[in-house]
Amino acid sequence: MPIIDHLGDGISPQHGRPPTSGDVQYKMKLETTQNERSKSVSIYIIMLGFATGFLLWTAVHAVPTKSSPTVTVLNGTYTGLRSSTYNQDFFLGMPYAQQPVGNLRFTVPQSLNASWDDTRDATQYSDICVGYGTDSIWYSQSEACLTLNVIRGSSVNKDSNLPVGVWIHGGGFAQGSGADERYNMSAIVENSYQIGKPFIAVTLNYRLSAWGFIGSSQVSNSGNTNLGLRDQRLALQWVQENIGAFGGDPKKVTIWGESAGAMSVGYHLTAYNGRDDKLFRAGIMQSGGSIAPRAANYTTLQLKYNTLVSKVGCSDVVDSLQCLREVPFETLNTVLNSTGGNSDYNFSPVVDGDLIQDWGSIQLTKHAFVKVPIIAGSNTDEGTAFGPRGINTTEQWYQYLINGGFNFQTPASIAKRILKLYPDEPSQGIPAYLGDQRVPSNGLEWRRTSAFAGDFFMHANRRRQCETWAETSTPAYCYRFNVRSADVPPLSGVTHFEEVSFVFHNIAGLGYHYGKPFDGVPHSYIDLSSMMASMWASFIHDLDPNPGVVKGPVYWDSYSRDKPVDLCLDANTSHMEADTWRKDGIGYINSVARDFWR
Image 1 (tube, helix red, strand yellow):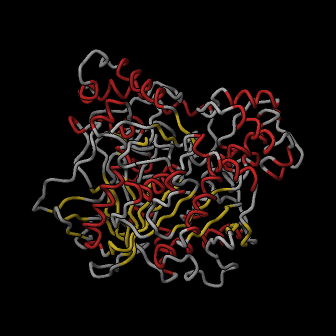
Image 2: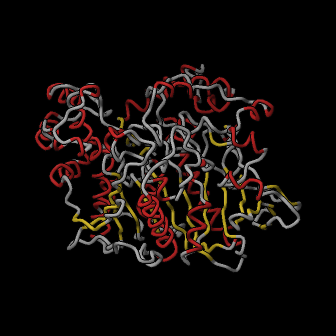
């Protein structure tokens, strides 16, 4: 199939904090021997001696013993860990595919083809998939990474038939993993039992950056497009075949993600033109969805591939893709890891006419998606993570737009309309608490450009997703998250990723290396986290976020054509609101979505 074009995750801010100059330190050479790998393991694992599942502070209570849990899946038997503190079982690092090494590099994932008679260990995370960014530097990395992890209550047995939540991590399709401690499942799973809405949690790794999303005519002609998404889909198939052995119900799977993970959920909803392969019955999308926020044209995509093959000496061979498979890992990784954050090798999902058959905006308009209930939302000040800095005049902003500032040369007529819809009035920019103030250090136009960037990258997509679900009378629960946590400077406002610690009820701030999100906050923040964790668990359990919220301050209404509303999630003041926020600007962005290659 010929490639039509290239979809993106937009700018990829470092999750959980604003980027800093220290981020360049992520350009570390990945160790390739087992001895060297052991040196790069997270300091938590070094201190404790083994991976402990999703709650490392309880490691001493989760050790393999004679009473350790065992599960027999289609290929054989695994032994996991038991946490007496949380009364949970962890099964870690279980392969869901053949590992993509050797000739399987840059190849669609292959199902497992071997079984075993002994009992295999599932008490440690595997290496995470090779990625480039601060989400990844804390963990050992390699190509042999296609594994998943299962968290369940210890009382669960194979006849429990519990609902299942499958988490797909974000990170711009370039970094992150299912082992990231910020996505610790123990707290939200424990809470789900406490409210009577128990579920089993699954997290997974998938290939990233060029390893998972390499694209070109050569790649397209070989049928090896969108490998990272295909990894996720094979993991979902593994869940269908095996989750029953853990006590889960394969007919009650919710796929769930944030940022690139939410976009992944969006792609699975529209995959194969909306074909329902019965891999899931619901979806949760936090700051992302079916409409990609920006794109590069086909010529740019091919240029990235050509640059890569040239760098590693594969330009003059008949089969450059096979040549890339044969390049030593150290050589290829050094090239991919030498960009220092520029876009030379920023590969991400492509419209390939197969898995992704058309642009998200077109598929939603045609209602070509799997009709299942969703939660979809975004954060009030998303744009502070994506807005361009250093722009001081309207003319500079106009030139930025028409000259490819968002990786797309905006037509002049559209750019002029954007200038009118997002005027040079600081009070209409973000964060709103700044009133009429400008922020010269970020550019006199920064609040204006950030307002547009947030709508362009996140809010417009979320609104269109909810509107489309309402058009087909499919339940959609939509939200706007409106709380800034303690680890983010005031100037960032309620920026990208802020809701994650609240959803996972991660009060201790596990995995937050640059500041703890709940340090010194009012108890109302913790109450909000409890409510959100309960709502998410209720949705996974019942396809409705309301039943498990005891004495909650608000009832979450679904989105409808007659009553388009979202839940504003705020400390003490959560409430339903009309989904009319920046209606004109967002409406215009959605009306010209195809012009932006969305």
